[in-house]
Image (cartoon, rainbow, N blue to C red; front, side):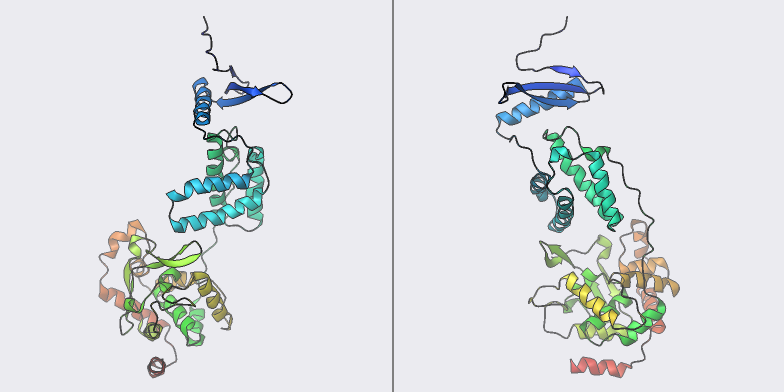
Length: 378
């Protein structure tokens, strides 16, 4: 004999699609009809559990009966989630969140369907967004709607049923040619941005590592640079943080032909070699990128690429010069776990021989006396 349901347990039925629905009456509508609330699950127990969680939350005063707009719920999700992530990651999240809120603007959270998610992601692709940006948007949407589903704001997470975007063919990483490197070494201005670009081309440093350098990180003769910190962004402000990975902590040997650049960058009476407008604060990477592109635009015969392309250039040019991969990785600090064990076996004499090849390949017509004059005049 079937068990009689207890008072308040609600009705329970299996739907045509195989899922279970548990209903609960919560008073009456203005027209006198019962106000029914439904809870869904793959099993009877799952549907009952959702209803019980709802009742307990309601009793504790944790529920607010409201139809949230997507931007409202997205903001609530972020505020509850942000304490679990680092300040730098929070900046990335807020950027992605702005894209999502622009895409779903005034839509109610309950009205967003799988089709809407698919169309949104396709529009991102048409707008030229990268695969990683699209994946980040989809991942954040999944978390936002997952939280909405857990709070009974939506019946099911629409992202779970949206088709995934096929990845585009990976673009080859851009790098300057050997001819472009020679032009840059010769034609870049003899100023802070010119010296910095030459150093990046000759050492493979990341932009964030360069901007975090203090004079104490560079030896007096400019032959070695120690990487022990990097610029990170917190709430739109550049601050000092840790390098990208454990292997990014390293000491870089500087080729002879650009050591004067390292010495000149240390000549200013500032805490960081790059400071713009704020005393004892590192330069914002976006400002550096602007200066970088302006400098490259003035060198005829050179493409205007990004600062990070200097890193790709260093690796490709060193490989072309016959330097083995383990030595290159020990200098640039790639976080490749499979290669980490090789770093310990790269002797300083081998590293010095490697950078001498760079000096020979990209020797500048300007004399050492010219560079010394620059240092003295600074």
